[in-house]
Image 1 (spheres, helix red, strand yellow):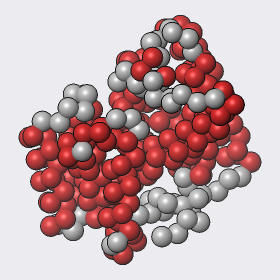
Image 2 (cartoon, rainbow, N blue to C red; image 1 turned 90 degrees about the horizontal axis):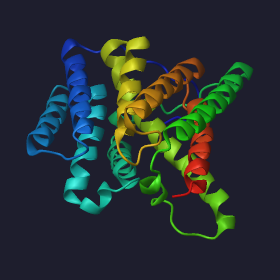
Image 3 (cartoon, one colour; image 1 turned 90 degrees about the vertical axis):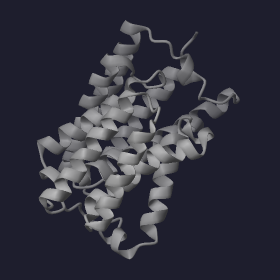
Length: 267
């Protein structure tokens, strides 16, 4: 699996492949809407879609089906893994393990590319970090959200360790979320509806809806809107740079601002 080079969009799949992908996206949105409480019928639906993608050799939909099924299944089997950030990290790690042992699946992962980092890309990354950080500061000032649940995720540590913890959080959390949304989700959508604005919008809305919960930052309906716009811009940056490095760096820069706001907030 190459880390260098540029991302190449997958060809648009057959009708059946497109339908599987769009069905997974729709049911995943339902799952997020019910606050990650997974009813049996929903898990059965994801298992059926995964089996269908496997039997029909729908490779790109299978990647998405596999990851989403793991996202639902793992917290049910191991409830402690339903906590942040494990509910995102664990399915991604297991997914990577499954893909890693299959040469056919490894070859079909087209999004793990560094992309280009020209002057225009650096300017876009810097602009996105500045604008998004300012927007978060304004949101936090205007809405005065309860950051207690988010602050509870920061373990007690000496003050001098906080900057290091912030960097670790920023670069790990952004890598995980970029791999999921600008990687797995966006590649599957590119195969279903073609690389373009529709794919960008759908992955951005799913990314935004993830921020509705009490530990999201920003959170609530305003947070969903802000995160959706941010996800759209990260997706555009991924298209523009044809790689994952630029959106990862931009996301990490914004996550540093998130960590700073949460860790310095008072009750």
